[in-house]
Image (cartoon, rainbow, N blue to C red; front, side):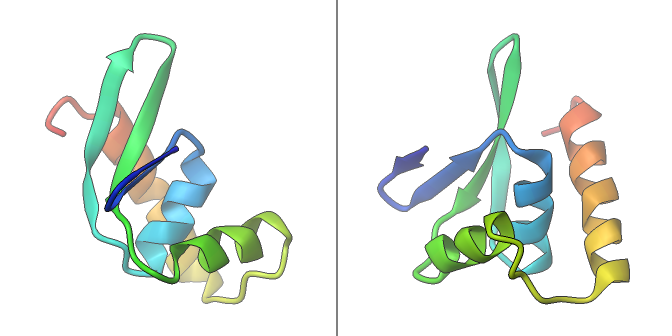
Length: 81
C-alpha cells in the first residue's frame, strides 16, 4: 500500500528486508485489529528492493537479515510504537 512519500506493508519479512536496507521506519499502523502495517518513509529504490525480495533475487548479509527479522518482531509486538 502506498501513499505519497509513505510505504506500508503487513509482511514481516519484507519489513525486515527494508529495515536491513536502511529504509526509515516511521511506525506501525494498528488500526485494523486483524492486521498491522509497518510504515516506512518511501524512497526511490524501494520498489526494486521489494521486487528483488519477492522474486528471490535479494542479496545481502544473512546474519544482518536475521537480526532485522527479530527487530521487526519486537517492533510489532511492543506497545511503544
